[in-house]
Length: 419
Image (cartoon, rainbow, N blue to C red; front, side, top):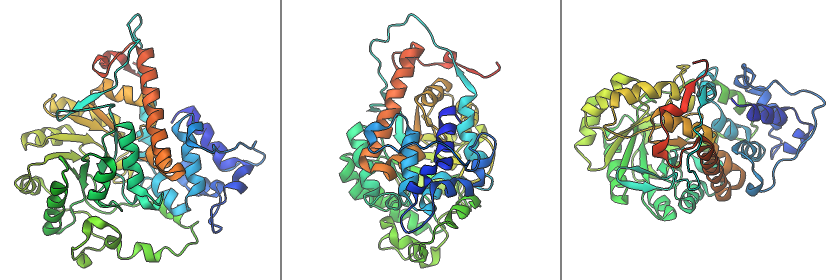
């Protein structure tokens, strides 16, 4: 985690301004939130609140944001503890979520000089379609928990800034409405459940809506121990029972389906390669697997005719592997050998991180938490701000690196710390 973020989170946790950050309905201050989350007290994370810290003001508009972390602070002030905790936390001790961020800092950049970078092109191509940048809006569910417009605000921001959007299978807005707001098709992400008829129904609906790519999450086959989230939820004095019962009724992609026997069974621990073959037989959409982190699984995906891979560990929210996605990326790329696109997510907070991902060999990157901070802070304008900040940072570092386009970024531009 970079020094800017450490300093900023320490400010948020320790500042006497915490009294101004008290959340609606007496739900506790930002200082309490960060103190309660034990993962924040691991090495590299801020200490518990310190008395006498100097006060600073939160930004009042997205235009003021210097980096994505200033939007994180506003999101923390706006959201109730359980909702902010849902964005922030990983599983168990939070080691994997933390490692996702820290590992980027262990890669050093090697700038090249005397290259004409008067014009910088950050566009990229995926499945024959050209995108304005390699920054993809990741599938994140339940976005109306962070802002009343939820996925619609995100879709409009993606449209305004020309970004590819992947819609979560547990969206709180229908795929049809999101595509209308986006003004173009989105990719659709699936949680398979244990009922094949549900999968078929959602597959057909995404296909009919015009989604060109179906993204199957394979790294969440069971529930996870989200202990940090539970600690944040203890600070939330709202009556949350009404929202957390009848879960599927608040997810419009399950409308018209009988989900009574599937409450709490969003995932499918019986999913195998045979299951994926069955899915392949029923659609002409491209299939992308999200959650591949090993060479053997990546090679098998290519053999099975999978069209793309997202190297992902669910933002450290599935299993506590302790391994960052950027650490998994090289072996996946070696196994794929350039035959299909490989994207990566996990802990990407800076333009530098994006350059490091591209230099390692990724075709594009997904961002999740960062744009949710923007959404919770300022709605559509906040998401637009996050995307604009990352694009600006990416362009700036590419100029500094002597790389006029993404294709000119290579392994020669990075070096592991200590190498």
